[in-house]
Image (cartoon, rainbow, N blue to C red; front, side, top):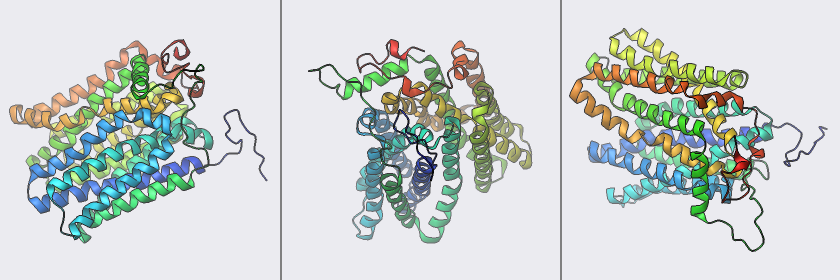
Length: 445
């Protein structure tokens, strides 16, 4: 029988991969269902309306609430605990997704009714995704896995869902129709909720410990909690620089995938099949890169791995399409870029989890994600207007240059030296004295 040695944090001394394995299982189930829905829902709207405008509006109605609600629910995740937020919002998402095929079967579904249902799906999915992200460092601690390895495995989960989910969704929609894909998505949300609620160890994902308040003093309200997260983030130059940089690269990535690659495929005569081929090759390589990061990143210098990953993942994709290179060369570059991208997210996740005190983790991650995603809706609009005005090749060259400058010139700033300096710090040691002083001396770097 293996002895258990209790630690100061109440975590057993016996190693078990159940906490991290259960969390990753819930993540892969819910993310895979979401990727299936990302194929099924737009196709359902497009077939029903034959309108690209309505199809785009439905996508906007899901993503806008996702970003906004995710940003605002950080204080709730910290106060109620990520576990209860995760399983409850997954059930709401399952109910909202399942209502669409149900109303359609009853001949009661209309577009004005579909839009609020889609908005509810996005609004519930944002806090659910955030809650799972917030539990990663605790799962790593309980499983006695290095944080970079845990975030690397989380990245593998996301990459697998992004690679397998669309392929499975496309096949499912082609064989059984888009409504079947929505039913599968609802089932995935339900299963993810069950995994979080019933299979994770007891006590995992509870509310963050609060600093004791003086007698008679009331607990801080929502906006004071929200402001505490914002003040902490404002006082972290490294995190802010990283988030602004990722926000710009996300905008460039959105422009690349939504406009530049389809236009290139059409004008080069390769056709739409090549879009899926490039995406599949890059996604598979990203899975390999995430696995390599999970195994090696905790032993590497973060700055080297981080900027090396961005060097491979960013500008080369733009430049190879602008060069008119043969298809085999394009595939090689996309595979190399995917591999490099696999090293980026694990380091970003570990950096955020390490620097944010545990009681503020939900709020800091929520605001950080919102800042990093803010440019995504604009990427396609800017790229479409630029290609119309200047042509495809100049925009690809400009995009590659912008990507390189964004990811490497900022690396000369002095705060990047902190990326490796504090990697061993335990975030549980960085507890704020109160919600009024969460950026004071107790949080000094």
